[in-house]
Length: 102
Image (tube, rainbow, N blue to C red; front, side, top):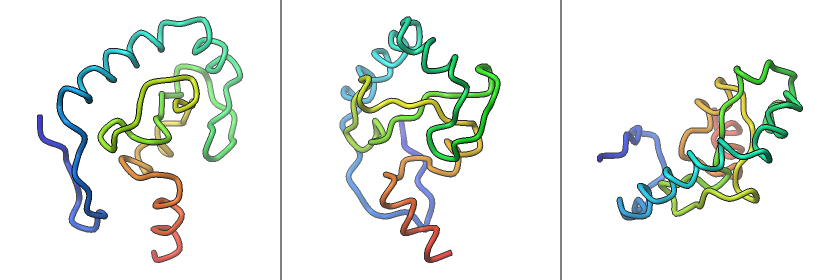
């Protein structure tokens, strides 16, 4: 599986595919958990803090899996689809730097 990295991205070595596959499987399990359902039930996007219907929220990894992040309660937050798409594989710090330079 190749990672889709844009030309203006910061350079990094992606996490091994075995790590990515394992963490995506763990994310699937986490999405089925009661804890995740409670997070969605709040209806708040972690990034923009706007209110959404739970079906309009996605799981965002604060440290993306491709960057070596894990699927854990400490690393996964509800995010609206727009914020999650804008963040992509960036960390929050990189996203902030990108927004300053844009």
